[in-house]
Image 1 (cartoon, rainbow, N blue to C red):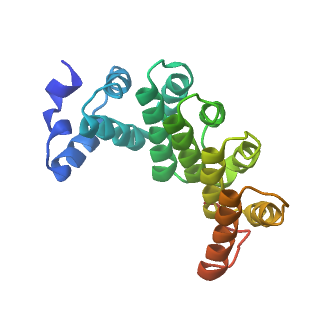
Image 2: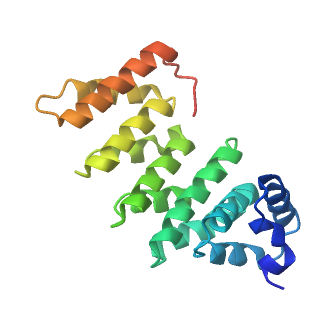
Length: 204
């Protein structure tokens, strides 16, 4: 029986029914569930695809190996972006469990993906992972990709790692820095100063 046949409410218009179905899939998963959910990531139905992403996030770390592989190897850009978003969902749902190295490596590789949506989805996922992904985020500033750099600046300001302030200050002080990056870096520093003290004890 297909996933859609067994859990038709995964595509229901009512978000509460979809959420209930997502938890049922995670709680009642079989050896075929991961593969079935991964297949949904190629669906044109945006709601169904997002539901699969969220369900993989509920399943958690057990889904990381399959997501990492597909993020790196799948020919479909929508699938790759969805894999990055699912890894972000796992990091959000399971902050106490470190992201597996294969997940981090796949996200680092995705920063060089030819598709901009995949790259930005990877930055978002790394920002959700937090401090364990700091070095990957910092290195991404050297990729000479304005969109990625802008997203990375935002992520560095949100991960709660004190090294982020140092990098942002260094960027803001750099002569001839791109105007967009300068504005992003100074804006991020202002937000940090306004909303919270920088605390080395923060992890995400």
